[in-house]
Image (cartoon, rainbow, N blue to C red; front, top):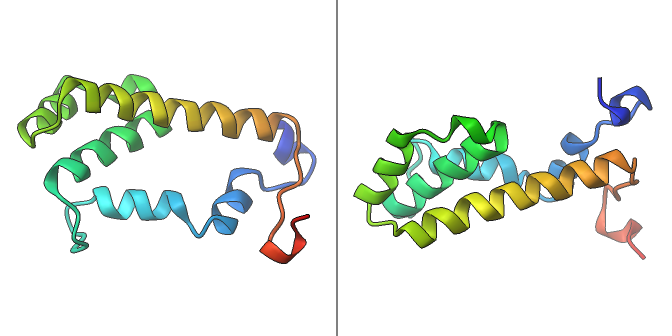
Length: 109
């Protein structure tokens, strides 16, 4: 149980709701059934980001090969992993501090 859950807070779920469901958007865009105008390369990179979000060890040779096959460069793959990992770190940092997250824009200073 996380510190946020132990204190009766919803942590990342609350944050994602406030941000307009950013995690759900990324997962939808990475999925094969999505018909949004997103390139195959972007879908492959979003899939890698989604794997990093779940557990960085899930990023497989196959996921990297797919991204390369869709035209992603090693630098783009590297940056995708770096950015996704950084967001994970920032989210855990904020959750670990039990930071209150506003539920609406009007409640921000």
